[in-house]
Every structure is written in C-alpha cells, then in structure tokens.
Image (tube, rainbow, N blue to C red; front, top):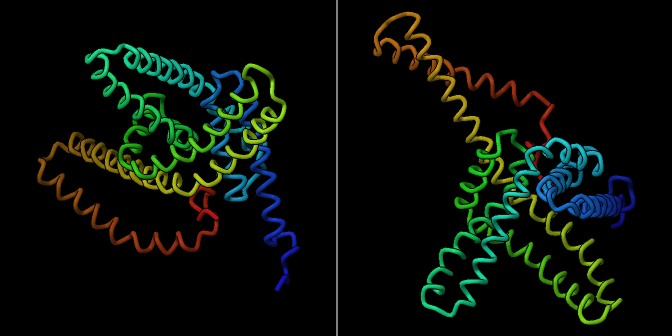
Length: 282
C-alpha cells in the first residue's frame, strides 16, 4: 500500500517540496511588496514562480521569482502607482458619496462601485498576463480587462479566494493593533499572511492557465492573420496585378498550408521539447 510512498518522487516528498516552494514564494512576495510601488512586479513574480517552479516543477522557486521580478520591474512600477492611485480615489469617492446623505450621492455610488469592481477584476488577471507577455502597459491592461470581462465566473472565484485571504488578516490586524497590542492576534496575523496567500495563489494557477492558453492562441492567430495580409499586399504592389489574382494566390497558399498541416502535426508530436507553460498543470 505504501510502496514508493517515501521515494524521492513519491507523494510525501512531492508534498513537502511543493509546500517548501509555496512557503518560499510567499515570503519573497511579502518582502518585495513592502515598498508598495513594487506590488505588481511582486505579484507577477509570485504567480510566475508558483506556476513554473511549483506547479510545473521546472526551476527553483527563489530563482524564478527574482527572474520574473527583474524582468517586469520597469512595467510593473508604473502599473502599481497608477492602479494604487485609482483604487484609492475610487474608495475615497465611495466613502464621500456614502456619507453625503443625498439622493445624488446614492446615485453616484452605482457607477463608482461598478468602476471599482471592473478595476479589481482587471487586477485579478494582470500579474499573470504581465508574466507571460512582453507587450506595452496599455496593451497589457487592455488584455487583462477583456479577458476579465470574458471570464467573469472565473474572475469572481479568484476575487472570493483573495477575499478569504484579506478578511481574516485584516480582522487579526485590527485585534492586534487596536487600543492595546495583542501579541496572540499579532502572531495569528503573521501566520495567516504566510499561509493563506500561497494556498490561494497555488489553487488559482489552474483556472488562470486556461485563460492564458486561450489568450496565447488568440494572439498567435491574430499575428498570423496580420502577416498574411501584409504578405498579400507586398505581392500585389510588387507584381502590379489585380485583386482577383491575389485572392487566388492567397487561397492557394491557404490550401497548401492546410495540406501541410498534417505533416507539421506529426513532426510536432515527435518533438519532445515542450515549453513549461504548454505542459498540463499538476
């Protein structure tokens, strides 16, 4: 029954390895998030390290974390500042309209809450998309917003998961740093900060990876379509022929690609080298 249970690649050692990786990544995420302006790069590295080093067992957690952190620092800092200011202003507006006590104030609560919800939904997918694509900040935000609105149930589940992290920690912090310092509540707060974020990030990898695969396939298809259009326009300008001939050339090229796709498929199946993000998540 327990044959192979205690082997190096057995269930017990796999559990301890994953637990150690989750613990290390959580500590690094907390430390790198302290400057506040590095919240987005830290979250990006947190997700990247969790996906690659823990879920796919490729690389070392600390090494992959700092690698992603450095790569996304220049894009992540402006995003941290912009999103932080936007959330702060929306929360201020929410408090102001809620305490206004007028009909106009209550009416303004609706668009404020909707906008805040959209921003939070976008932030749920932003670190994962930032870790996978090297586009500019505007395109990263657009992709995060579109995919968040397209996968509302998944994003809501992610929001619930992070609410499970934030609410207990906030409650413990309130008890620890209230009128008097409560040591037991402080220990509880730090314990929750070390345990809960890693668990939620670990569980969120599978649904987020499904969204990223869809996004990656869509991006590749768009690039291929744009390349085909540019190539057709170049042929039309160089040859100086009519649109009907060009259409025939493009159709012929598509047919040849379709006929050759089966051969390419067979060759791809023989290729044993697969990128880590194309592997099935454990």
